[in-house]
Image (tube, rainbow, N blue to C red; front, side, top):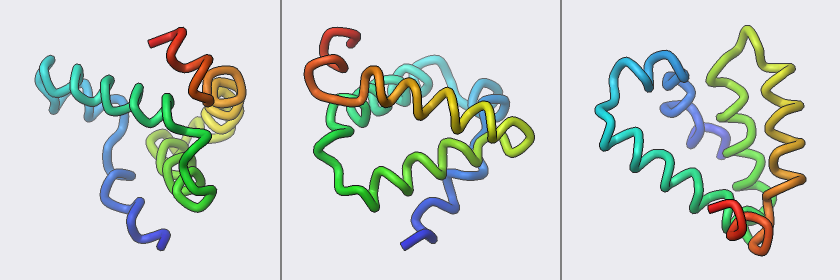
Length: 86
C-alpha cells in the first residue's frame, strides 16, 4: 500500500510553487483543508500514507516537518477544530 504515496513524493514546496498556477495552488489548499477536516475519520493506514508522504516533500528537513505536522494534526486534526480554522 505504500506505493500509493510515491508519485506525490516528487512534489516539494519548491516545485509546487514553481509548477502550479495560482488556481491550482488554491485547489491544493482546499484539498488539504478537506483532508484536515476529515482526518480523524480516515483509517489509520491512510493517515500514515498521507503523513509519510507529507514528510517526504522535504527530505532535508523531515525531522522538523514530522514534528510540526504531528503538532498541527494534534491541534486541528479533528472535525470540530478543523472547521473553526477553515
